[in-house]
Image: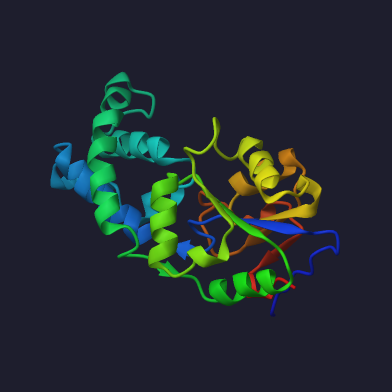
Length: 233
């Protein structure tokens, strides 16, 4: 059955998540992490632990969190192990170089994203991309996928003092768009987006195909759950 989401007439702007909402970036994450972990001295059996399933359950809370949890998983250590935490800055240096080179080469825009964003803009809604991915990587990916022109603003996980699911990034993004949180819809794929939106006072629409840490997204309260962004009216 085709889903649809009719936005309240009060909505004046939209904030859109990136990974798992607009672009399937699991391939990018997996390839970059494999290069990074190899640079960190991981052996083949350790590299094999960080597979696509692990990455799909881990992404969404920022690069530092992803690197820490990936190192720990590869080495068979707890996430909060002191050795793992101490190695994250070095891993970040390797990761940054690989991601800049490979960003977007192993990812695909989800069906209905480009047309859905254009539809929102045609209705007069200014758009902002808000992601926990570093801003430079987000800008680069949107450019490479032909989506950057849709957005008045792009804010990454390093743009503000806190990341989603904290509401601060949404509140600041609403300020940049010039509209109150209650008049700004958040479009995302995970409980991170929903929690941040609820705390900020934004209504939220969730896509059904993204990365929600292995939990059914339909269990997360939202204005609507949709299969494509162009199902928003």
